[in-house]
Image 1: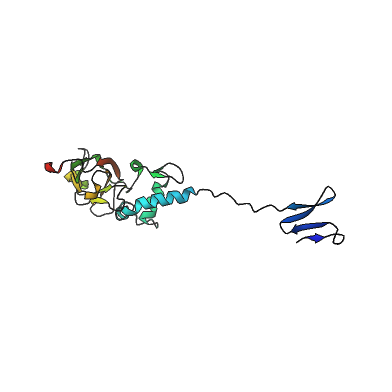
Image 2: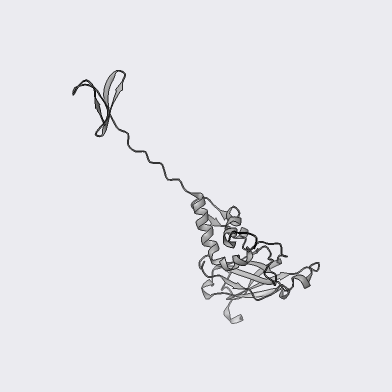
Length: 219
C-alpha cells in the first residue's frame, strides 16, 4: 500500500500498482516492483536412486524374502536389500542411474558360497549353471543346501526365470528360459539356502548369457 506524504502532490512510499515509491538521495522516486523469484528445480538424487533400485529389485521379492531374512531385524527383507545395494550397485548420475549387475546382492549371509560358479547356454532356451565344492568343505553339512538360481533380462524385467530344486551336491542345475528371452542378454545370480532355511550364502553374479543363439536342432 502507498503512503502519501504532504498531500496529493507530495511524496509517497510503498507499492503503487506495478510500481513502488521510495526515497532515494532526498528525492521521491517511483520504481518498478521486482518480480517473484523462483528457485530452479534441483534434481533429487535420492528419489532417482530409489526409483531405479526399487523397480529393479521388485521382481526379485520372493528370493529377497529368503536371501535377506533375519528374524532379529525389524526391517523387511526388501528394505534391507534396498539399503545394502543403495551405495553399491548403481552407476551414473541423477536422473540417469543404471544398475551395475556385477555388484547387485540378492542374498546376504555366512553360508558357504558357490565356488567357481559358471553359467553357459546349454540349449536355445536353457542355461546350465555349475559350481564346485572343494575337498576341504564338509559335504555332509552343506551338501543338502538348496541352490537358488535367478535369471534376469532387462527387456522383460517382470519375468524372472529361476531354478530352486537342485541341491549343492548336484553341482549343477538347468534353468528353463522363456521364449521371449531369445536373442537377448540375460544376467544370472546364485545363492544357497540351508535345509532349515535359517542360513544363506551371499549371492554371486555369474555373468551374462545371450540366449537363443544355439540351433534348436541340437537340442
